[in-house]
Amino acid sequence: KQEVTQIPAALSVPEGENLVLNCSFTDSAIYNLQWFRQDPGKGLTSLLLIQSSQREQTSGRLNASLDKSSGRSTLYIAASQPGDSATYLCAVRSSGGGADGLTFGKGTHLIIQP
Amino acid sequence: DVKVTQSSRYLVKRTGEKVFLECVQDMDHENMFWYRQDPGLGLRLIYFSYDVKMKEKGDIPEGYSVSREKKERFSLILESASTNQTSMYLCASRHSGGAGVTDTQYFGPGTRLTVL
Image (cartoon, rainbow over all chains, first blue to last red; front, side, top):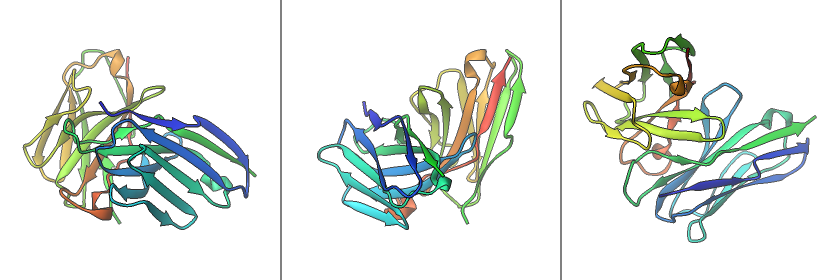
């Protein structure tokens, strides 16, 4: 059964710093990996989706990488801003059978200090 | 702009009541999903639907059922609500068989359900 782990669980950094969030998954048989952002009490906003055949995706100050063989992904946030404060969730869509939803990590709670 | 809406943001029900959570998407997506989110457990898949009138159990279907009579609407039903079903419920939709960004799963704002 697919398991997704996110490290660290929480992170607090000063504004302007570049930072990296980590995600690992146990089964490399995946269609894709998706990064989401969740603000308190709200739903999820999709940030980036990386197909299994891709190595990275970029959107503005965000860059996500995928190393499928080692079961790892990173989300890089450049020049962090207080508005980036949120919980960041990593999720994989497995191709190895079973339920066809996403398997989520428990998230990284990010605080950017002004 | 893509949109997934859920009928209620907050809901309070009593133990034993039948509860309906409604989700509507306007993107003509074939696939729809219900998740629940709990502190320390993260998001877990309850049920999903490939298309109209089609449904599959997710990881935690016990105590829930679903209905999909129209493509745009997916309902989650708690036949007899219990206190351990107090949670945040999130609906999502996705284009079927897509590649690239069309495989993105879009989420609604969530319904925070409290069962007393």
